[in-house]
Image (tube, rainbow, N blue to C red):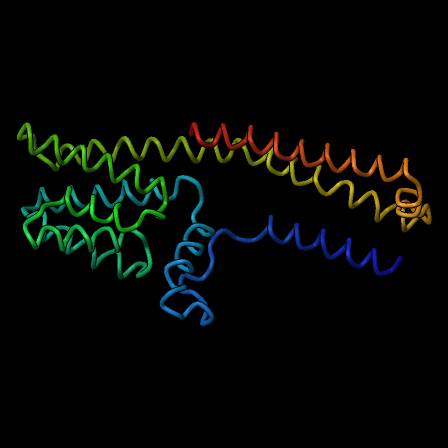
Amino acid sequence: MNLLLIITAAGCAAAAALVAAPSRTRTRPVSFWAAPGLRNLSQQLTHRVRRKPGQMRKDVAELLRQFSALLVSGRGEGQAWADLRRTWRSRDPDHPLVHVSTHIAASEASGSGTAEGIRRYVAMNSEADPELTRLLNRLVAVTALSEQTGAPLSSLVEQLADSVDESAELAAAVNTATAGPKLTQMILSLLPLGGLALGQLMGAEPLTTILGSSIGIACLSAGLAFLVTGRLWSRRMISGVTQRG
């Protein structure tokens, strides 16, 4: 009985720790991931864990505004992307936008242009953040529009930044609105464990009752099936709302 209580308490503590853990983690991967073959995977997992929904949109909007300001100041596109690469590298060497800026700056230096640099980055990073890929494709469309119509690229990029900012605010609002349902989902998932632990503490021996008869095992199987179904259902509903944001 003591072993069961310890296991139950440890499971509850681990779940609570995962929920309460801060969203930001260390920027650099631990030494275990120092091998070149695992470094990219480590960086992707690190950024995926630490970035809140909508954070990538805010970062891209900031990058676009910086790019627009550099163009207005008289910088060429190649110089602007080189400056952005240095700026973002000083903030976070492993940020995806550093790699994006590097590809675009190299493409500009070779005469291929911004759009081609973005396409190369997307092609070489098929496992990149889908949100980042979608925003980069929008930048490609804006660049192509500027080339075809002669419209100032700085103005089009500024308008794109405004649109991305509004989208980021919507994503943040949706994330706030879904915080309550996510917490409820977690609590409901842990209630059966809490009930078992409470029953053991009271001496009711619920596990003996459940596992000691075919009816108890049938009830346990049905309960687990309902628990998994409810969790998947609620996760799907929450995901549907967040994806629309």
